[in-house]
Amino acid sequence: MDLQKVQDIIRSSVADHLQTNAKPSLAASSGQAASGQKVRAAVLVAKQQLEIREFPLREIADDELLIRVEGCGICGTDIHCYKHDPFDLCPVVLGHEGTGEVVQLGSQWKIDSVGKPIRIGDKVVTSIMETLDSCMIAKYNPQKANLCDDMRIYGLLPDTPNDHLNGYFAEYVIIRPGSSIFVVNDISLKLRVLIEPATVVCHALERAKNCGSILNFRSRVIVQGCGPIGLLMVAVLRTYGINTIIAIDGNDDRLAMAKRLGADHTINYHNYEDADGVAAQVGDWTKGLGAHFGFQVTGVPQAASNLFKYIRRGGAICEVGHFVDAGTATYNPHLDICKKELTLLGSWAYGSWEYPNAYHFLERAEKIGLPVEELVTDSYPLSEIETAFQANLKQQGVKLMVTPY
Image 1 (cartoon, helix red, strand yellow):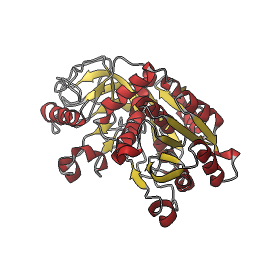
Image 2: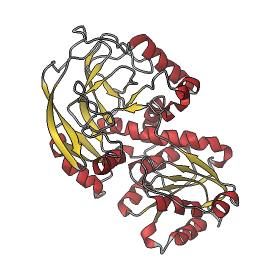
Image 3: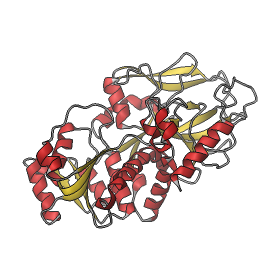
Image 4: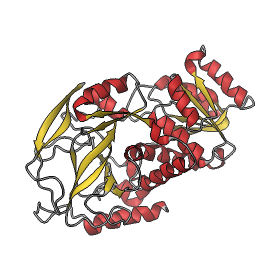
């Protein structure tokens, strides 16, 4: 789908169907939930302290939707918030990799963000509220709206006296005016949970295409880091047709999954004395030249520094992994960049227009036999969310999902 067309549809939908100053109304169509009903949510009340709390379900407005949550993946950002609260959000209901069923539909909602009819009972995904009209980046370059300071994401919204259900680690989430939303009735729960993280890798791939001929069918590409985002990066590269993919990680189970998702070679860095040893192995697979391109998908600064050693002269690196400040990485400007004439790219989150692209990537990956659905390895009920977070911290499984029950 043409990205500009998607953006135009989103903005037209917002303008025509979402009036941001609407007042609550009983005219909203009703589904399975009643105003005043007590519903549960997992609230991060302090660092490393989650509590299950009950909140009365407020009446939705004409320009809002009520979603009954069916599942939400645990993201690395959720873990950073759990450990450090870097955005100073507590108390907050986390969870942005979510999906669910429309149970109440404000009367102003007729279509989703790509023009599909939206009805009670539809399965949907959403995480982004559109940026404000005052944002100059979004106004003059809509496809860079992900860089706006006021971009708001469900699961990273502060708690307010009237709005507690702002994230998917809850039984319900209220979708407010200005949100992008997509009907996805025809895929499984696990694939729906993967759509949001898939937008991250689809955005990184679009950024990489800016390097022109560096990334093509003949390219030898490194994916450093085989967490859920890294593994999806392997899958999107295989779906895109990249000829040789090298996955680097320290976990043999995740490297085995990388193989199943399309990696041609894997490297467990624990088996090498240092980064020079890893570089030598990469050289053996690339005629001594190094990889054409590298996607850095860890949140470890030293790994970001090491990747320069694995990339050939004239190559490129895309930094995907550092969504939060984990520290400083070092490099030699002469040896690592100038002498190599290296291209460096950053990739920051995603835009709402990348949801359709992520959906089609997952659909295509399934069709060519990549077991992307198997990335969701474990499911925990909301009552055991603390256990789920601890399991994630211990790197048990790959993508862990929290469900209401």
